[in-house]
Length: 90
Image 1 (cartoon, rainbow, N blue to C red):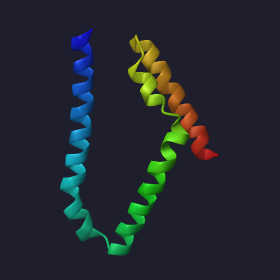
Image 2 (cartoon, rainbow, N blue to C red):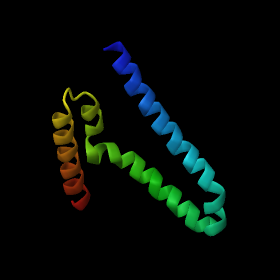
Image 3 (cartoon, helix red, strand yellow):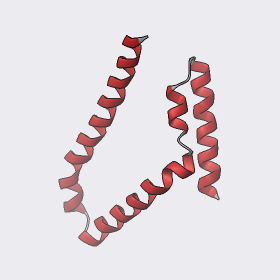
């Protein structure tokens, strides 16, 4: 049980770290492709989305981690996507 927990934590850490490295590697390219005003608009959009996202999705991704079986996790992912889609449309 303890080994499984550390494996899950390490997978989450590696995924998060890889996403940050990709974003950091793409930043010089994005700053050359877009004007400063466009880049600022993207930053404002991402900031607003980052604040609203936990309210829209209801933090169901935390429930997926606690699922005991794969079928339960798939069901929770489906529920999360449906709720997020309905809240986004609203």
